Image (tube, rainbow, N blue to C red; front, side, top):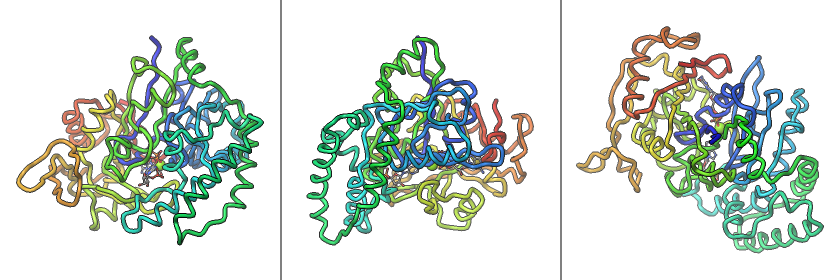
Length: 422
Ligand code: GDP
Ligand code: IMO
Ligand code: MG
């Protein structure tokens, strides 16, 4: 059976999925997004240019590729149209390479407002959402109220849009202090709908399976990360979709036995943006150094990312649930200048030491660390495994041994070229 390979974030997002998909795409004809929406920000850097994609799959730069926005994705037409325009201005051919599932749900302007109102009402306990309307849109999907891409060609579309908007206005009126005006965004949104209508809208589950049957090589591109999964992440500080490998099946309509290689991407340390538990978070100079050297500021929101040591408890949990077959380590170069590198191998809760990821992850957790000697060398120029310093190899080999999964690609800089394939 012809299978689909998968790229997934193993941590709290921003692991470098965009770069990895870009590096892997020469081996694939199709790249497909299966969940999430414009809360994602995937960065690609090559030939001196930098691109950040939110909805469009990261295969779009490769000639002859097909890029699928699957049914599990939620789409803001304003953001999608903006992305297309930006790419076209940069000379990238988009329209012939992009297809959109009719079953993907639409983010309405009022979904964004509901996201903002809900977050404002939560005050200090806010999730730290990207405010793109992700949660409210998935709520309408599971609540069976949503509007889908295929609906935009219906003669009743405006009527249905009006009805859902009206419902949202009723909900918004309950947030007494929340003022909003969507007139301008709504006008842009309607233009975005026109752009969406001009794209090839398909029954993607049928085409995806037919392509796989024909032997077309396909890569699924995850958004967010395993620890932001709606079921297994640090709930409620999570996103609203299944970010795990299982999401590929529901988000593209492929059977579980169609899953091939599962590439799990992780940083040599850890970051998180937004609120929620982060056991290995650093509040000291080491954390600031990671943020500065790693340029850890959100690709979508510009917010500073929280930084900390690699968390093997969380990484092993992610590997377990995704069936990760190959690991890809990113940003080892950010740790070039550290004397000692720490890795969390357990969580101390009271007198107990947990080696699995527990239901409750609050401030009562004290990470148990294993220490490694830093390599104190610039590894940015390394292109072959043999050329890495011994300390770096020890670090990577420890991760392989602890997870039982080979680290098959190592990224040592943001550029496409700064990559070591083992
Ligand atoms: P994604 O959401 O998983 O695609 O990741 P983001 O694009 O949000 O964040 C990853 C950031 O790290 C981007 O700014 C990348 O350009 C950068 N990056 C990726 N790989 C490396 C690497 O190996 N080293 C360094 N220094 N930066 C990297
Ligand atoms: P990529 O694909 C990092 C985080 C938000 C917030 C929580 C919920 O670039 O890795 P949401 O907008 O989904 O309601 O926000 O999830 N979050 C991400 N963090 N990378 C992302 O995507 C993220 N998408 C959402 O910061 O904490
Ligand atoms: Mg990102």
